[in-house]
Image (cartoon, rainbow, N blue to C red):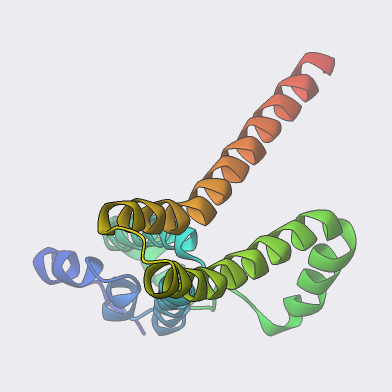
Length: 178
């Protein structure tokens, strides 16, 4: 049975995503949150840098979720079951959602991910070609290097903003129609 803990140690543990939940005795929730955080962090660090921004969302969720759990009355706290955030039996549903219902969105995300990887590899080769073969000056090379690193991130940011604007407009239209 999980027991409520002291506020100071809970605060210290809540600074690490998932650790606060694990300290309070909710190991499955803590492992789920911690695994999701580090998965996004590693994907962002290696493959698709804009995904690192979602790590902040997970961190805030974990921080406030830990303090919410610790501030619950005893009867509500003891009634909470420890469970994983994502259940294995729901993976079939996720497959249906990603590949049938939202096929276009999934395709665009996969294309952007592939574009980002290809851009990074081609960029490294091109920078070698420009610097060693064409003997371009250092200032121009540095400016081109900065631009080529920022282009995929800028495209991803523009597409994320466009998706947000689309969602706001469609929600506004739904509210006006009601």
